[in-house]
Amino acid sequence: MAKTMIEFQHVKKDFGNHSVIKDISFEVQEGEIFVLVGTSGSGKTTTLKMINQLFVQTEGDILFNGKKIKDYNLRELRLNVGYVLQQIALFPTMTVEQNIALIPEMKHFKKEDIKRRVDQLLGDVDLDPEKYRNRHPSDLSGGEQQRIGILRAIASEPPVVLFDEPFSALDPLVRNQLQDLVLKLHQKLKNTIVFVTHDMDEALKLGDRIGVMNDGKLLQVATPKEIAQNPENAFVENFFSATVGKNLYKTPIEKIIRTGFEIPEPHEAEPISEINAKDTLEKAFAAMAEVEILKVVDEDKSTVNWVDRASLFRYLSETKH
Image 1 (cartoon, rainbow, N blue to C red):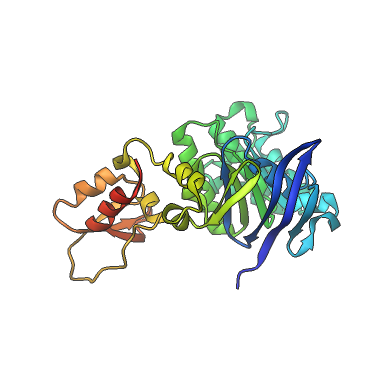
Image 2 (cartoon, rainbow, N blue to C red):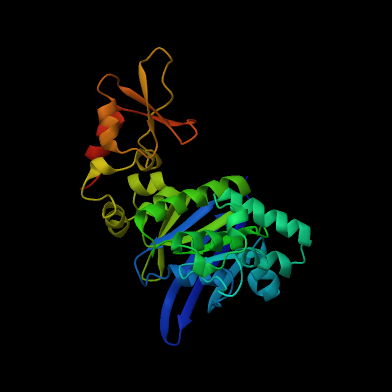
């Protein structure tokens, strides 16, 4: 049975006479990516900031690893919770290496271990340590700066990492690359991630489970498949439908699979072609000129899942557009 890493128990948050969070309860399991999604002002960032106590709840309890968050030493809590912001908050006078090493140094890691860790992390995100170690933030692109921000948050291997709309200011190509990076690092580190976004497409791509918020209320917590196929109410349904886009044929196959339109592995005798998970529905139909079934693979050519012509037509017919 999965261990609960974070738990909200009837949590409320007021700012003066204004109620921002209105009695929410949910759990985040160890090792999952839990995404809070909603429109601007829905309360998702306020909820996130109560986890590391940048905001203190007005009522209710928040548990971190089974212990009430108010019983933690605040410094100890924050050293064990990584934090990635939309505003790339690197220290401008510090080098890339110094920025990444900041928390490990505060936790008294050995110097040689920190240096090894910095080089390893830079390599993990395709930044040559020899070229980037001694650069300053002003020498980096926006995407590179956000990569360093992510590395700083995970450098000491905290059990929980919080992401507060970290990619919303970046262009779509860089945004997609950084989403892939989060998934890659999470697969390697197996940490617990709470990720805030206003973009349902981003939530569907990243989330093991998604919490949909509106007006300070948590309307539904479910898997991407459950939200796509069984939305809790009209708001959730409309919020999901609005992200589908004007041209369904440009939808990535990986999104179609995550929303529940895959098929079981077919028999070996059936004719099969292959498609990358990031390819579009349009390309999938083109690949089906000669076959009925497609094997969906990732960048390493490992099998992700399977789709057939019927499952893709079902996606078209059941998705609002």
